[in-house]
Length: 179
Image 1 (tube, rainbow, N blue to C red):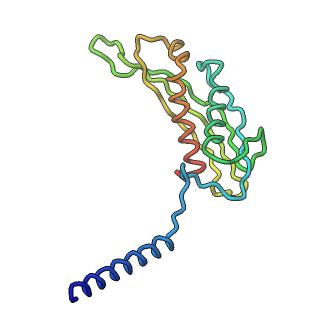
Image 2: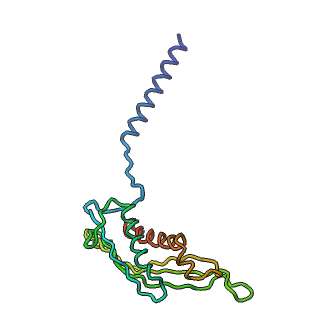
Image 3: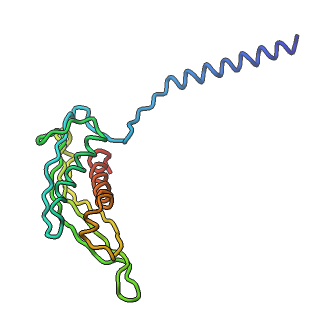
């Protein structure tokens, strides 16, 4: 009889703990987004102006490819409608630098790697919070084997896309994640 009484008390205690735990879990609500973007709730549109090429050495396709990469990240990581101009949130700017430089010099004064650096001047405008506006230069690079020509590297879509991805992610993070 005593054993049955202990089991009943133990069972009641467990049920009480489970009910308390369920109430605590139900009271706690977690809010998160998949990419961590902090976008004003009243913002409905984003515009990305064509980024002109203000360099002398860049390939003719650089402006178009970079502009499209920035549009793609805005479209894929937000629910904002992409408009051609006058968005609630707006990006504009130009490609300010496109250069190569030797890297990792070997003993025979030959570089084993070459670095391609792309810099972009970006102006971001947030119609709802002027404190979030900025005008900043972003730079990213990629290294390639010096035996390759620059034009062959420019034709390497994966190599160029990796630089665009890094640049656009930096721009996105500065605009929408307060980095």
